[in-house]
Image 1 (cartoon, rainbow, N blue to C red):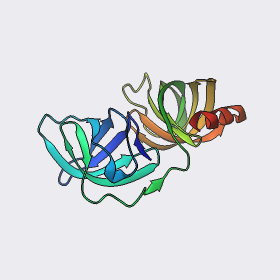
Image 2 (image 1 turned 135 degrees about the vertical axis):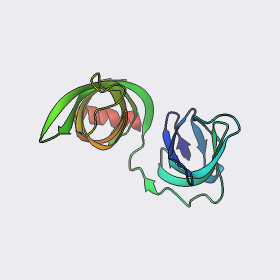
Image 3 (image 1 turned 120 degrees about the vertical axis):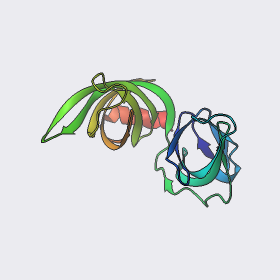
Image 4 (image 1 turned 45 degrees about the vertical axis):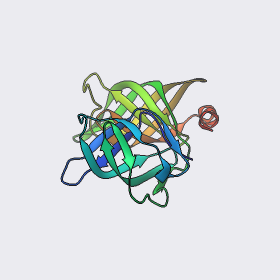
Length: 194
């Protein structure tokens, strides 16, 4: 089963145009990528505007690229769909909006400094998470150059505390892998994501 979660950020690359980030507005599912129904997205285009391109499609199973059309705030997969997932996730991700606060360590010149952040975890797995957060000093985005984060996330079983190594950072989004997580939290997280 291929699932594209609501709230996912998808990147559309069109010929002779800049990249566009689309945010999914609802979850869509299908047995195969070619069978995905139109994906409702938030875009800045007006009614009737059509764009063709390659979409970086993020699913719960992994990442792949598909050819498609953006029209009337819906993305449709066109043409031959890929045979499978290009980058497979080794752990199932669970979407949500889990409140989080913490401290990020950033590289600045010859040294490092700590900056407080707050926001929400948008998806989480036993391997890492996607954090949407801001810093009062850098609002409305995160400070550049984040190396790692110490986070406290409100989970259904209580507070999860983890050290996260930054993998990718864009504006107010930070994707990272767990560097350290308490054994009890790791067990509860595995059950939660199961």
